[in-house]
Amino acid sequence: MLEAQKLAARRGFARLFSGLSFRVDAAEAIVVSGANGTGKTTLLRIIAGLTTPASGALAWNGELVKPLAPEFRRLVAYSGHRTRAPRADAAPALDPR
Image (cartoon, rainbow, N blue to C red; front, side, top):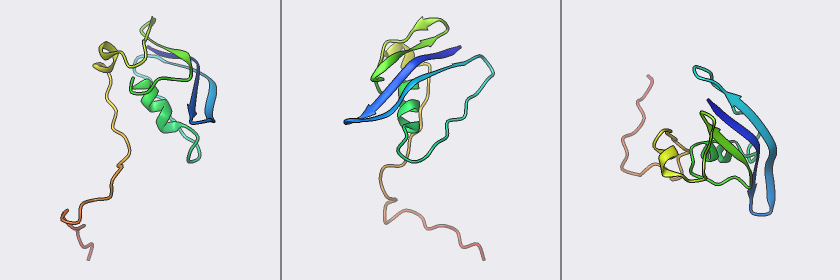
């Protein structure tokens, strides 16, 4: 079980979200949606143990997760946004004709 308690995140001086709490039991999933810049990726990075929340706590199976804890990060996977443009020598897209 994954449980978030009053998570908050900031980017610089801007508050992305605060007071976010949820619980995800085994075999359940959550959907993270919202406008650009509202903290969706930041939330996923917090859950994956890659980013420290501004405040709040994350628990895995009832145990508090220390931010950036390697023992927790071994249990999760995160695949983020592409941060660079494709290389010029990358294979071209297939022609749909």
